[in-house]
Length: 84
Image (tube, rainbow, N blue to C red; front, side):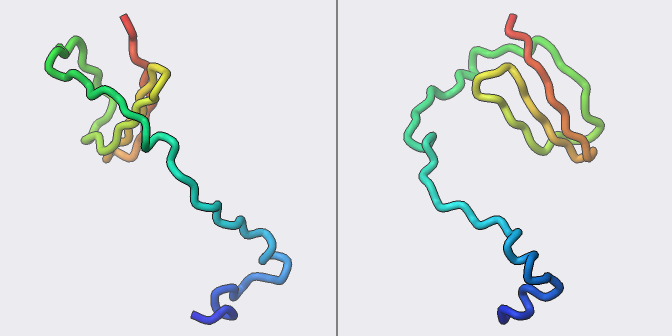
């Protein structure tokens, strides 16, 4: 691919609006060790219906009691977790 075709359809002023790629940095959390979750002592206390199809992704906030889920039903949801 030559340079002319890669910028086709852009004017000369549009070329300066591209955001440059950030420089590579080391992930600061790679060296951090954390305790594995002790799942053997857990008990199911509640279930919550929220998605109509299977959940395909889960993200847990590291400090706040918040969980985000994404589902095949094309919805994402934010959940708060009771800490009682």
